[in-house]
Image (cartoon, rainbow, N blue to C red):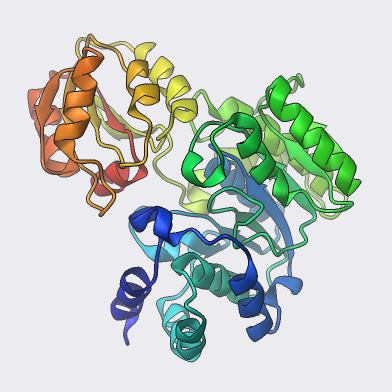
Length: 404
């Protein structure tokens, strides 16, 4: 198989949460443990940082990776989902894994994958760990896919565990209360391994403290800290909390790595250049200004929409599409009534039918036009817009992926 056939086999034959939803979720780590045993435990061959949280995982992971790269360390970065190409998920020093490595890994291990019915995510985690071990990285930043306790990545023993925040998302898998979700994320806290917590509430703080006591893990809360927030290439206001989390994490990592103040500053400023991170308050057009952002749940969308409303504009235009497991009654009230809407359906099997989205939006006074895909919706918004208008593209990672 060539690269295209290999990734098509991975996507189509095996369940993948991003596309299929519930049927891709595994209830334990048995398969992952079998896989790393089969691969001769690549996860033991590199140092790591483990990052979980409802929102901000990708940004936080990328900023940490960028700072470590600036400090001269060979740095692996594992994130999900990808926007354009599967290989974005696995990088070393900002460079995506080679196509032929992906092909070779799948070809060499395909019989094992088929025998044990490994999920897309389990295979991808194995691929990332194998690649980082073979590349002899100094450190790898490993982002969880969903949750933490049962996530395929949760077989590493990192130098540091990081939990960015807790919000209501993926409730059908992680639980329908904030404390249940916090309990799942807290599952990445390991014995004697320090843990950094970004945003928290009184409820979630108790969950994290109980887990840290159980694990004898030093615990650091960053939200209330007053720190110098350095400038970052990531311009979303919500990044301020992520930067605080990153700065505390770096302080702990200094016990293992030599990282200067200059490395931190340049790492934050060069995060997009160093890691290729996209879709975070990303300006994709000028006159009219258009911003794309992957925020896709109420916790993530609230600060983003507040930032949108603080912009200067003549008319505000929203290009939005969502997936079918979102709680629309939580998300839609966040959007302003006084705006033009361009509804679309993300081009994946679990994309929410655009008519269902438009009908639900109408209940909250949000009206607009219906389009079959994101590209058409964005094109119409650009066509309708005057130079002084402001266009926001989002609601789902997959809507942003189709536009970029």
